Length: 556
Image (cartoon, rainbow, N blue to C red; front, side, top):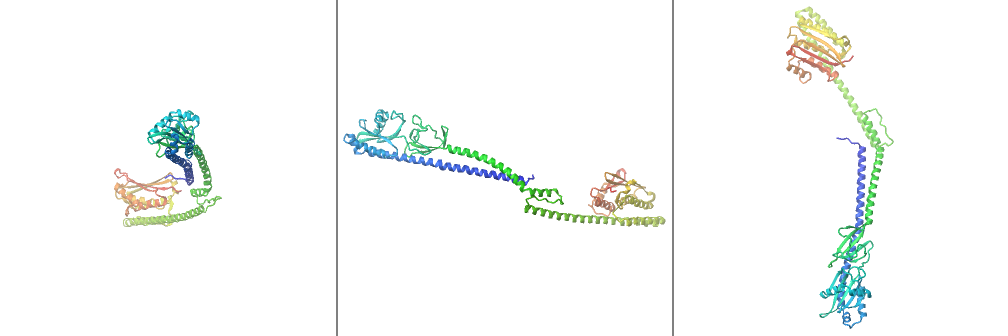
């Protein structure tokens, strides 16, 4: 698993939290803009649309109801019959017109289609008299008691576009005695930051608060598909509302250029501020962490050094947590060290006890064998037995006078020569031996009774099987390792028996046979470690006998 540094994790955490905070601020900013847009643009635009739509619906209803009363008024009917007074009729029509929210001009015609009362100027009156609009409206009035529609032809030659005209016929019985028309003006009361248009289904501008976006033929040229549109380089929010019961619609345009700039520059400012904030967090966090974690770094360096004698150098900022960790660490190190020392002491005592135990096994084992030989020699050759007793005493003094575990090699070789002499006295010509060890190796220190068990083992397992047993002892020193070689020309060891001997030496089997080899091998490993010990090689099928090599470190 990848190991991470606490400083990097903390710095990454600071940056992550900074990014989260910046993102949250940005979201709040965008939500606030959206809320502001909804409050200051969407809602006022919808409110204006609803208000104008209701006003248009109400005004159209007023004109319809009012004109129905007017064409049924007796004063107007008497005037058209030539009995009434023009002043009273004009006043009646003016009062109705002035009471309406949408301003208009009225025209009253007699049955001969001559204008008998109007609010138009004389020039406008003549233009209207010649306009096809008048004829079309009177024809529709003959077919329907009341009509209202947008006329896209010019009612006057003054250049204005079409007009919305209400027309009604004045009837007496089955006769039409005249016609009453109201030509509504285009102008709507202007809204503060809104442009309001009332159009028909073909986007002919019936009423409008501003001429902006209206073509020469009176059509609205601003695209109104969608909520946001661009016109003449300016963005607008569009709201449309159908007028109930009428083939017209109310369109409100609200400029959002201010909010567009606010959004653009706000986002730019937020991005720049975010980068600045992240840079500041990166730099400041690095310095803060360096200062804050300095005690921890010192503690980590102290622990990593693994030098228990190195004093922990506290910084100017001393933290109670760091001091507690250091004290607990020091206490645990001392406790562990004490346990290690105690354990090593116990192990050393155990090792020495095992060595002494093995040494104690050598002496009785050797003595039993020698006494066995003396028993047979006493019966066969008393003089030889006496000499054997003398040499045996000498060997016993060697064991008694040298209580140390290790002795000089030359001393152990002298002991070995006496041992061979004893065996030679017993077996005579049936045994021959050589000891070829360089004198300079005599000052090496070796375990006491090192080679005797190997020689004893060679004699014991081969002397009765061949005519003359030759045992050769040699030694050499190489790369700090002192190797002893004991070779014989005996019967050799079969593979099965070799496996058994190695199992006994390794402690995998517990048998009385080959005790000398096992004890010697274990003592060497207890003294010097697992890399040292005894190796055995034999090739009975080739008649090469057995070769035993013993490896110990050279200690001069």
